[in-house]
Length: 225
Image 1: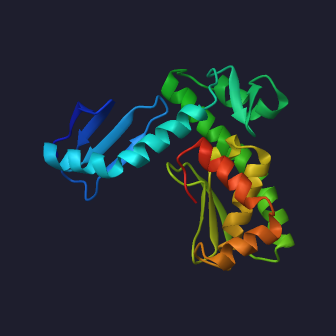
Image 2 (image 1 turned 90 degrees about the vertical axis):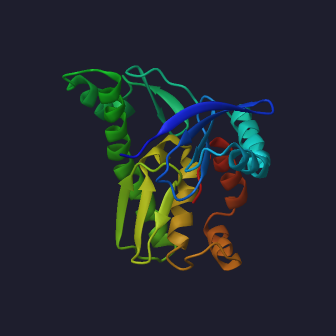
């Protein structure tokens, strides 16, 4: 059986939650929404951990600063929902499907309520993202094979070599302009499967404010494309 241990360690003025899982092939550092720093490694060696934290200290502090400057929008579960960068009441027209999902719950515990929100974002995203993807694919004269939606931890979207574009269901929480940027970004990967100069030029041709909007998105969450 794989042994997983969790402990809290101090590094200068930072308190780090260390999770040791021997089966891990790499080490991972992440920042939680409550600004807790989480380090996952396969080793418990103090010297190894200190060396890793010294190497990544600049990145950790940069991410903490960004999160402090741009705190996540909080909502009250069952009463509110975050859409297009704004908080809507569950009673709003935009929230009808979520309201229906919540009403059908037999066991309204937090886990099931959060599942309702995830289902709602997928349903809402299928409609909105589908229409924006169709709109920009026609303007850019690009054909994609299929659009997929799934909840992802570190990406807003992706484009595979077989022309399947996948969007993070959480994307629908961003402002409409930011969502459009992600759509154009992923469509551009149908032409350039990289982030070369030609790729960025293609994006700018159809989204002139790409640099500004990309910076806004990156300042909100620790997500990549």
